[in-house]
Length: 488
Figure (cartoon, rainbow, N blue to C red):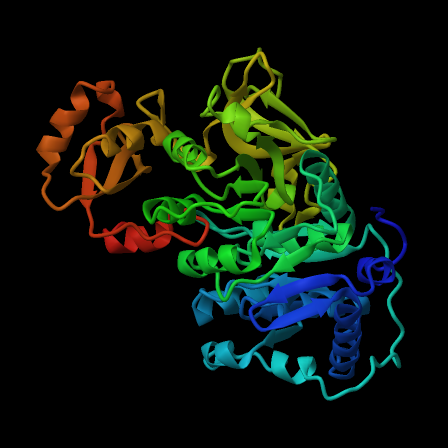
């Protein structure tokens, strides 16, 4: 595995000409076929005006053609921008503007969503992916590969605040794969199930890892829990990535892992310790991971054998990654003391596109300031106590929203909850909670909490709702929630 000066797909195809790159229920694609399709698609896109350096949005369904498009754009030297196909047309339009997208590739199934968008350069995926050409066309000049070139731009999941467009180079992709491969080596015989959406970095990196190691990617019909379960049986993967919500549904349905499953990477949201312990009890080889879009997926991982002894930890840093815990002045704090988590790794983003201010805030002296708070124990295990959005400062006291939520969920009448802070002239921030419960009053819940948590940590305002909106990565969609409870 080498970052090299050669396009990765060309290099991998030369090594593994007839090995399977992608699997789906009705298709098997070898590395040589993937190369052929990607070159042909690159030629067609080039004919339609896509050029080196262009930012090209991709709004497409979850199948292997997504990565045919990615490789085609890389051959041209264009920069892919995966877009969330669950967004509204107006949200997509804003991302097009923000990322300075010059062309947008979509498929027939999603084209209708764009009918209200004033964007002229839309390309139908079915047109450029068709097999009408018998041989790959090479009339355009293949862009020279450079590991320091921009590889993709990806919007953060945006559970709160404004979205940011994260820029990664090919070098950061390579370093991310190298770090993970040291932890869980991929071989030609391994199959990784593409069980996360490609507009999230955890999903995007699955085919990239295969591209660099010669492994196979299997594609379920969708990333739903039911289709994921069906794909487990059909493809018998060795590796799978899940978010907590999907794993919980599988456990509730008493789904058991396939016999040759080596690793289940669990991330993308709060991985409650009981979920991890129950999954391991049921035979799942759980690897808890910590990372973000800015770190190009995981930078720390927790082996299944360590979960029982340190169930609340996110594990240890991966190869060539460093994590420090610092105070407000960016000074390191002693082991076990809580502070901000900062990271140094070759997989760290290049910048936030078009946002120099936020870039300078996040990248400081070679370190990425995550805005997450946690600690590292004497054995080197990382504990993420709270995300920045999870820390509420009220009346001069720091309150971790996760802790308050866990107390609320102890009440058997509560099926879901989300704790957050809102600005308040008296307290600085007021603790609030959205609660899903059919037969519980605010007074009953406050009385229940009084014996279990300090008084200043009990929410001053409760909102009882039928459900709490979440995105595919299990993060609460604050905007939708606040609209539901009439908070602006």
